Image (cartoon, rainbow over all chains, first blue to last red; front, side, top):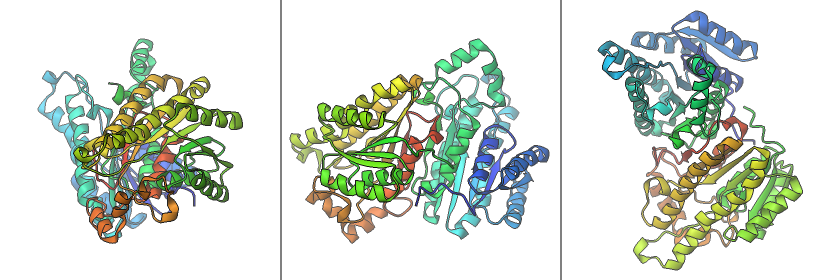
Amino acid sequence: MKADFSLAGRVALVTGASRGIGHGIALALGAAGAAVACAARSLEQVEATAAEIAAAGGQARAVRVDVTRGEQIVAAVDEIGRALGPIDILVNNAGFTLEKKTLDVTDEDWDAVLATNLTAMFRCARAVAPGMIRLGRGKIINIGSMYGRIGVPRYAAYCASKAAVDGLTRSLAAEWARHGIQVNCLAPGYMRTDISREAMADEARRTLLLSRVPARRIGEPEEAGALAVYLASAASDFMTGQTVYLDGGQTIAW
Amino acid sequence: MELNLAGKSVIVTGGGSNIGRAIGLAFAREGVHLTIAEIDEGQGKKAVGEAQRQGAASATVVPTDVTKWDSVLAMVKDVESRLGRVDVLVNNVGWTHDHLFIEKERAEWEKEIQLNLWGMINCTRAVLDGMIARKAGAVVSLGSDAGRMGEFREAVYGACKAGVIALTKSLAREVGRHGIRLNVVCPGMTIPASDEDFGSLSMWAAESNRAWSTPEMKARIAKAYPLRRIGTAEDVAPAVLFLASDAAGFITGQTLSVSGGYTMM
């Protein structure tokens, strides 16, 4: 038997699946055989992601969820369960960055970053775990960031939220290990997304940015997808509570 | 997911026994050209036979003492002359004998440093010239949670494994610009499934390590892992395959514990 990276017969929920890393992960999980529930606030955008998966021969469903609304998460998990079956794989991806001098960060700014980047991950995990415990298996992949590890000026709320994702990952991993659930954190560095497009378009900024990455390039969403498939598959069944940096070596070189 | 490993030239050091054997066979099933660098030629030949049956494009054992630079260099030259290149090096050779630091003999420390650290320095150095020239290559080294969090009776072994992690990170910085990636996989305690899975030179043949293999001891060890079981060599192999493959093309300098949650950091 070849190494088992297949997700055939599995059901996955990917939050923030409309763009960037979440989009790349949703496509990769679909290509690996999972039925993918693609969730985001805008149904239109995730319908496009679901259509791409279907066009490639996969199974997918678009789901409208605002992850900062707890009742919507519970309703979405219920809807996915009825439409696709119990969720085996949760990819907690929805999140956003805020670049602002810390002295200018308002309480509302801070709360908004923590609500989406941290609290929503806890709520999504809490919503899917009972089903996973019933199945006796499950994979939760939390999207962290190298910013959770390194000190970046003007990103206090974002850095704090992503460091907290590491802590959430380890605690859930330890608590739910006995139920056959593995919880790991996929922590990207600079990736080719809407967020980085502007920086990469400017030559001086691009040169500076790439000089900090040992691999001398930024990552592709497809590469986040490949790592997510590994973390979602049986190939990683003995691995839990880990944070894997997908950053071309940048974190180690900081 | 396609790992695209078919046809690659892969060296697994210590590929005749236990974890190395499972890694080599997992690569074989992906259709690679497998070279098993082994000090125990007999054990290596058995693994080569299995690798051929399981789908390797080719499988060869090259008698190698990883602690000897001349031996390592000759092994790498042999691979490069047969296959033209080394795409993947798996630094797997490792050895320890559990004993309190203050009760251990200096000769045992020396042996641990030679096998666990010098072996990986030698093998990595030997493959880098070719990888730099071709602007591609992946090195996956076997570390240990002992090197991340420390462990009773494994002081010098743990120091070597921490050294392997630092070696990997430093080289990842130096050679990233040449398209070469280096990463570490840390298994937990991995007790061979049967006596057939290791040779007389394996650490598992040592009397002190045999004591881990009783059913009572295994039940106790399993409780130390959040996933409540002892890992197998087959648990470790997919992580090595993934990191060696193009699917992990943006991952370098990382240390991955595949140890049932024993270490989370």
